[in-house]
Length: 148
Image 1 (spheres, rainbow, N blue to C red):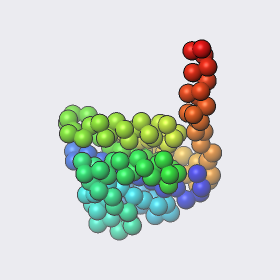
Image 2: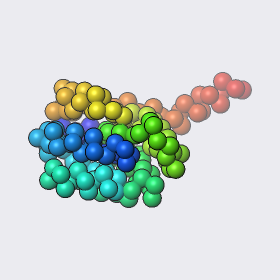
Image 3: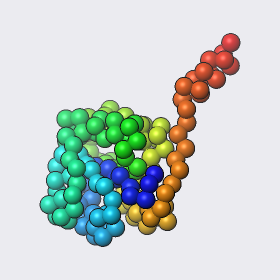
């Protein structure tokens, strides 16, 4: 990760207000980084804070998958995803896929504001960081060899 972080901002409907307010409170730090987000969330953050936020599709229309693909491409450094644990989501498999891909590519993930605060105030925010991404092709081959 470079000094300028690429931060994905995602929130379910019941959590959008919290994320927008958090971004507004932290806009002095966030203005130094590249921000992106899903549909309405990106627009709401940009409207409230004045920060540029690249918007993808809304989550149910593929936005979660778009962000997941950007993680795979190495274009997102961490994910702030405030999901609503009290509301079922029709696109829950997409949400789980996004969280899974974040783990596979060693992307820090904040699912609540406390974790987002810790990430944003980490000493790693102002410097570089080397992620460890497991080579799953090697891992699979090693597992196959053990089965023989």
